[in-house]
Image 1 (tube, helix red, strand yellow):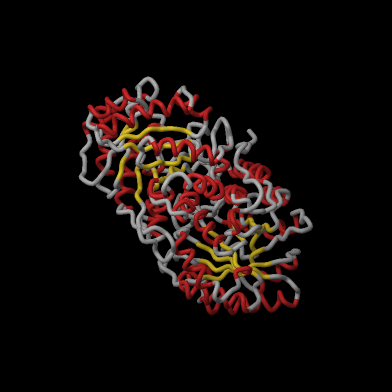
Image 2: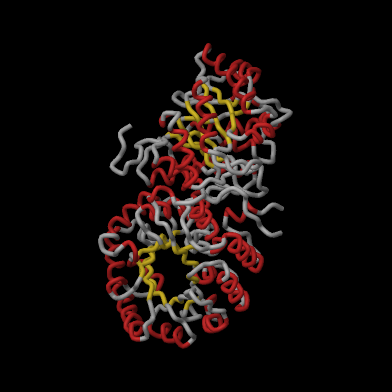
Amino acid sequence: ARLTLPPCQVSSAAAATGAYPKRVKVVEVGPRDGLQNEKNVVPTPVKINLINMLSETGLQVIEATSFVSPKWVPQMADHTEVMQGINKLPGISYPVLTPNLRGFQAAVAAGAKEVSVFGAASELFTQKNINCSIEESLERFEEVMRAAREASIPVRGYVSCVLGCPYEGKISAAKVAEVSKKLYSMGCYEISLGDTIGVGTPGSMRDMLAVVMREVPVGALAVHCHDTYGQALANILVALQMGVSVVDASVAGLGGCPYAQGASGNVATEDLVYMLNGLGIHTGVDLQKLMDTGTFICNALNRKSNSKVSQASCRL
Amino acid sequence: QEPQASGLPEYVKIVEVGPRDGLQNEKVIVPTDIKIELINQLSKTGLPAIEVTSFVSSRWVPQMADHKEVMRGIERHPGVQYPVLTPNLQGFHSAIAAGATEVSVFGAASESFSKMNINCSIEESMERFEEVTKSARNMNIPVRGYVSCALGCPYEGNVVPDKVAEVSKRLYSMGCYEISLGDTIGVGTPGSMKKMLEAVMKEIPLSALAVHCHDTYGQALANILTAIQMGVTVVDSSVSGLGGCPYAKGATGNVATEDVIYMLNGLGINTGVNLCAVMEVGNFICTALNKKTNSKVAQASFSTGTTN
């Protein structure tokens, strides 16, 4: 059955009282962050079709894959085929993850025009996740930055664990600001602040952003909220109130949390767009087409959607 | 209350509606002793108000047929309110006879919803409620007023904020001490919540307002945050998010008390409620109902064995 939207919920005219940005850029991370955290390895044609469908929704940025060793991330082993197989529509960016120079070179060879590097605000998390210290990871990224600059390839920087770490617990906002500043100074055009285990609340989000915004201009900031504790939309709301206008999300809320079995992970793009529509904030995204894409990938993965908007709209 | 530096209230009162609104929307009829145990456990968590049951005809709401037994069977903790629903004077008398010391009446901002839900127009419903509030006043029984469909109606679609304000004002003027504004089908967003509250706040003092958000479209916490930022200090929620949405099959309904408290704790707002205790109660009732919790905090915490 095709999901349909309720008749009532598109806000008329202007965004509420100028407390919010007029436009928000939605960065779709489903095909990479989402699928990477799904148990079953997804066939390449399904990945390609997912990205192609997303390209028709009005989304401007779709994170396509990760040029990391298949030994570490088997789900992304087909990165070259995916990169070469997708329809790349004009006006849409298809960033890929590149943990190091080698990955960067492979990505560019496969046709990538934008890359991302993944740092963290926690030493322990960095050790466990990529087997080195924060300092060492930043040195690796510097190599990527240098090569990217020469090739005129924009680089997005991620900072994980900005509101808490599965190993260290509390993370200081100062540390988040320090890592963000380093990534920004080395040339990342945008810093995506990730609440990796979803423990953040509007309170900790506000406090963290206030400190980071002293070091990085708000126009270069994005938030990447996980919904593991149901706080994602409230956290995103506060980020918007503070001037952030780039938000990461995953279609159908793909991708569980690897640190809490059975718990949800990424916030669902549908639910985010529903909220932004209700606030009169322009995203350019067609919610119906997005929901159809969510239906497609959930059928392909034989799983239920994590998007509440999708669940509600389904009248079986 | 003195606003904190953040501009947010220091304290928010949580009104726990799980035993009534929650269970009423659960498919399986819950045995009376389970209901009583649920309420008794909730009484120990620090919750200041627990909606116990509904004195409505068992023909309409079979789940609440045991209202008298539940009312008489629960332990009443000092300092905790135990309101019950009373749709009309008959229900009110029955509630008082069973020992109720606070009641609630349920209006709506939509004519169609009123007709479909309680078989009369908004005006007729207000007349019934006037009878209740008059009797309640004579007996010093506080009455809480609900306004359903505050942000949208399953039949009419959009609901005009001024209509919500008008119905709220009627209920407040007839003597309701608090008006709980319900996003019955969860379609609201921070945008529509703000507009609706702005209209209602022209007619009702902020301290007499509560929000009752459904999470059907995942918007509840964002909507509650918006309400709190505007100065609302009373929030309804349901332990483990009990109670689906009768208008969208398989969709969720009430926002989970655990998730609300997690957010309020993170904002430094005092509720007096022990989150871990609520989670234990959620675990109890979900086990008894043989269902999964709708609380994300519970899902995350029980799997890691920790609460952040």
